[in-house]
Length: 592
Image 1 (cartoon, one colour):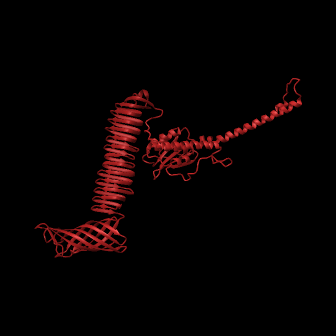
Image 2: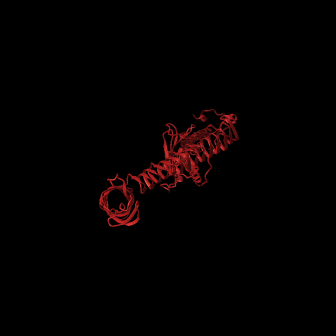
Image 3: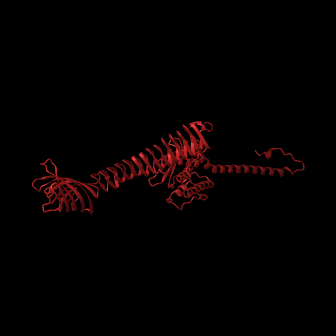
């Protein structure tokens, strides 16, 4: 309704005539309608521009927080440090969880074989997004880079950040985050150019911060607890009785003194206790006690006790009879029993257990390592259930994994491939280039049946087995020359050099024991032999071989040592001890 046309108008009689006033009222009405239309158009524009931000706010994690699942990430990463960094980036609570929970916003961190990490975000509305990036080697800088990526994943802005963090160039390096031209369709989720530019600006700032984090020096470990009160000194007689009775337990102490026991949120200096020291969140500095040091969070520094040291992760040292770290260790554990997750350092004690990679050494009576890789184990018994094991030195070594470096001990067992050598009394491996011992078993190695004869009338049959280049020889036979036959046993070691597929050269050292079956089977003579045999393969499974040898016979009498049919060099002749030497020849056949 146009009120200007119907409302009575009070005007002095001298005013303009009605014919003049009516057009003016009609123009005012038109102007009012135009203002209303402009207001509606402005409201539509504001709604369109605000729509993406309203969607982003609706998709953001609720105040209840977000879950973080660490699934096989690099052992250098401290899950607690990553959780704290992500919480700071998102500005809300982040909870470490063993697995994803339906209906909860969740970040899943997974390590990749090439040293990268993949972070995936699952929102409550079913949206999934993930990116794979390279992270710095320093654990603190790596946690910061992951937190930046987490913030961008939650806001769905990780593409630009992933390209900046990755050491490998992106697939399309020419692409740049420029807004779409006027008239072109906008990407999904982008309503206006201003909204798109704001998102790109945030991603660019995050990428720049990530680059700065990679170039910046390592940050100190987190030694603060948001919301906690920091005091210079605190003391307890027993937990919750002492200064904690007045200040509460959500306190970080610079210096802490406990009699029977004490309980505080954290320590950033020195804590002394005759009984038990308990820190519920972290320990940065040193804990010394007569009974136990319990850090129910990360420990940065040293824990020394006459009883038990416990921490969720350790960067520093634990010294005590029993040392336990449920997470990674970057430092030293020294005690009777040491238990840890991944170890980057040294474990020294009677029993050492590392439930993760060992980048360093385990020194003790018994060492057990379960993880991706194990460097060095030195003890009476070593057991490594690792994909890769470098060196084991002990009385008994067991490596269950894809590859093993070197094992030195009385008994060496490798269920995978040996890259270096096995040196011991008994050696077993799936594959091995060098196994030296009295009994060597290489499951995927060579196994040949040999028959050979010597110039001294000894005819032997036996097994030659081992790796591609080294083998053991076991044989049994008889000496046909002489006034009576003698049963002969042989044991030897040798190496093989191959010339193509048809020729080979064996260099062997053997010992023969000759026994008279008519005289209680007592050994009558011993023959030591070194030989060089050239072999020719006439068929894939059949070869002939032959070559010179040098022989030394040891007998109880000069007659027992006289095994050569054409004379020998007397090295020593006595009534009860005789030694003779001579050159000889060996001829034989080999069946694969």
